[in-house]
Length: 216
Image (tube, rainbow, N blue to C red; front, side, top):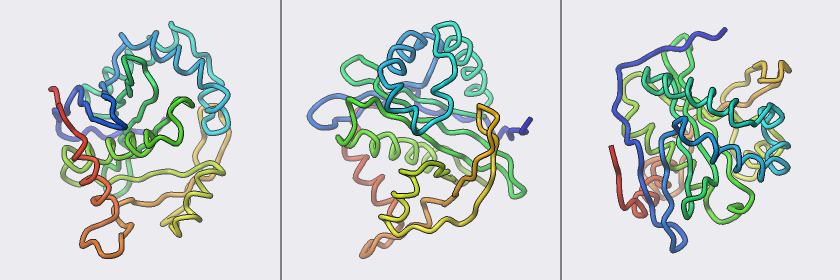
């Protein structure tokens, strides 16, 4: 079992809202109360998500999600992992997560997200990505940096389209017990032409213009 490093206990926002495409979008820190919402969203998204994530084939029952979210609440308290659910018009439409991983240099933060098919090609994926990057930049201080793992065909196409090169490769056993190769790159190393900081900082600055409310 992979050991997880706990850094100093952090106080992250439990909820934050943004104005996106002329509607209110809220990210809420995951809790066991969301079990019914997450089961409904994953049921509607199964066909779309099954080609991207192995965990979609696992049982997505209320009991299974309630148990998973209960465990996640403890991980969030220990500063080992964070998960935020995306709500659009009071309906759960996606999620992003940040997990602490051990390396020889200290804790890394690995991030991933998924979006309901009704929200595709409307900027919600970018919204979820920037939300996670914003939390990492603003609140996960110290010897911490983010790694994004690309492990599916569409991810490889994204890298090629944007001329991004992986910094390293790793092999990890997924939730189904199958080994898969994963490409790793650090977003803050991606540069944007004519911008003095990284492309990620540029994305976050544009994202913050949509931020209207933060709750602790």
